[in-house]
Amino acid sequence: MTASVPRSGPLPRPPREVARWVLEIEAAAIAGLAAQLDDGFDRAVELLRKTTGRVVCTGMGKSGIIMKKLAATLSSTGTPALFLHPAEAIHGDLGMIGAGDVVIAASFSGTTAELLRLVEVIRRLGVPLIAMTGNTDSPLARHSDIHLRTEIDHEACPLNLAPTASTSATLALGDALAMAVHEARGFTPEDFARLHPGGELGKRLLRVEDVMHRDDGVPRVAAATPMREAIYEMSKKGLGITAVTDADGRLAGCISDGDLRRLLERGDALMDRPAADCMHRGPQTIGRGELASAALRQMEDKRITALFVCDPERRLEGVLHIHDLWRLELF
Image (cartoon, rainbow, N blue to C red; front, top):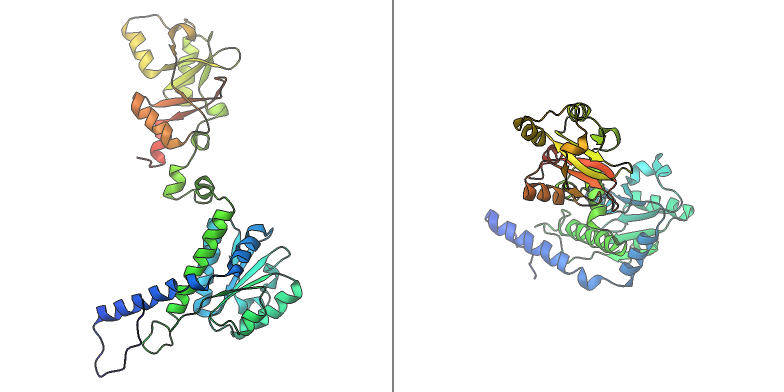
């Protein structure tokens, strides 16, 4: 896919024609990166995978904006990263670079003065440098440990001046680098969710143990507990249910608000009877490692409002109420 720079004329082109032209040029610039990949890319991925420190991304102007995005992408996919402004770096922020770090610097020309001054310091610190430039013979490329090419035919600008195709190419190569490191690290959806607890994926991948009531928040009584005390426990914990456990802490049954209503409708004298006489045997349970979304499906299928969380030996570990899942907006 190629697009030529338009000849100047007395009238501007229609906006959609300009838009198509820009998109074709930028798409061609990104597609052209595939042919520029070499063993340097493999070495860069391995270097980032093994780093014990952080990845320091740096660049000036438009390239700096792109590198901020790369730092954010790396951080959100399991590789600690930060953005360092090269001008600020040489005026006091060099302490942000430490032993074990790796620096990624982007400059399409490879001649940005602020970056070259920073390179001098990086070399003294002995920190590995990955450069992303469109000029293999540039000073930044020559002084880097690994050079990643971002060459393009021309910018998506009628004057071939405004950084457009070059920044798109750098952005795309940065994404490719981050995703290759992501896969090399074995980063999982669960890992992603832990770093995005407020996002929709984070909600969908929450575990039962992340949202369940535990310890003193779990309504529970012993099998021999009088029902007056069991009702008090249900009222105190406010979940409309209580677990009934045996002497070893294993779940023996449960008593719900619905169970109480049915017992009262029969005219049973409840208050001094033991919980074991009034409990529902075989309550629904779930493991703490199950997804919260799976717990919601189980509640919906069984038409219940609570699940008891038990270990493989049926020892009670917590309780999950449907209201806890409503707050997550899993519906």
